[in-house]
Image (cartoon, rainbow, N blue to C red; front, side, top):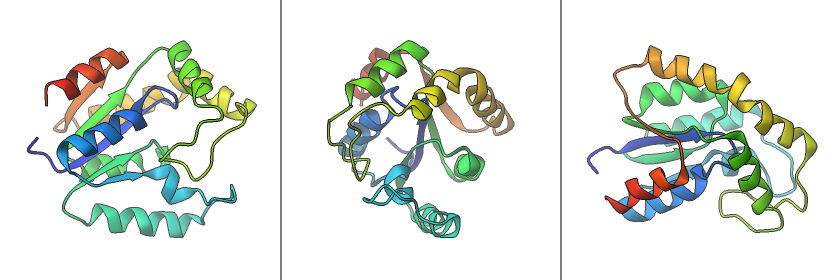
Length: 163
């Protein structure tokens, strides 16, 4: 892979973090999950300025994979990246993915869920209508970027298999 700055975005539960971890292993490019930058182990979050400073420091490095949406900073990450992987999977698949990780420790989060938070479930259910159109508009605005859209986990697996 000749690109060095990659973002992996899409609905929670779509498989983007699993893909990003596997991509990092296959390419040797450092992985930065935004959830680890934003969330503290005690389930609080860092101030916006701290998050933005950490993100900027990462984007100033030569190579990175940044996993996560965080819509407020998405355009900045698109501007700085070479490659975008977008997971555009059905809502039911994303909900099942989020439910499957309940009670399971994850390397991309400082804690694990013991239940699916109703607000988070609502976010997943609304993602296709509320967030995805904004993402596609940003990608259209930055049409010179190399974008790969996955509509299934099998497509993502096939991409990794081809590396």
